[in-house]
Length: 338
Image (cartoon, rainbow, N blue to C red):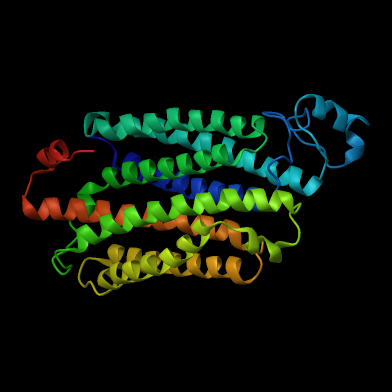
């Protein structure tokens, strides 16, 4: 019989990994908002060293010429931007290690639920591709489309990790009682996830436009950026009201649950909080001249919203399947699909 402690260790490690990925998304947002993406103009080293310099005196006098010859024009050493980007890279390496550790720990499920093991291993491969894509971001001199692909893949990695950890705990999730939820709840959560993906997609287009505008303004005069934004920005802004009311309904229905549903209640509160914070950050971007602090917060909340919605959907799916057809422990494992 597999040690219960090993199951708990896997879930704990997987949860830490998910939190770390969200932290990386936050750091990536800070890098993008501050224009620190080229703080390290080369990859995987930074200004030719594994540990970047702290002062321009540590670089050759002709370093700008050297990097211009490599295709990186206007390279200027800025210690704050350099170390911001370096923190981003260190976070990526740390997550790579955590992903490997999670995959290794998942081997305990080979005898009970092989899908958990195989999906955990697939995350390793996807993260490897994500690392390559990160190098492509630098090599492309921060092309907006590649940056967006890099961020969307991070969203997919988080969703896959959430599914793996939730699946490993389906014995617990199937004990949740969802009888008090309205019949249309599952349909609404699916629609909400779809709307979130559409909103994120529009948001990435807005961010690509903001990146171009910021570059034109040399990351100053933020109060004038809004004047040059495309129409998609106003669609994105208006659609947030639909996102707000849909998720408030979901959060309220979960919050009203009674009995053995504390986890669902907490998810409802978390979902509502993330949506409100995301909208407040978006309002500050719109009305306060694109403050740098609001951009990474807005991005992080958008990713958290989808992650929480996805987890709620999985919890509802497992609970409803269990209540629809009482199953034994082994048959339940065999009938759950990915």
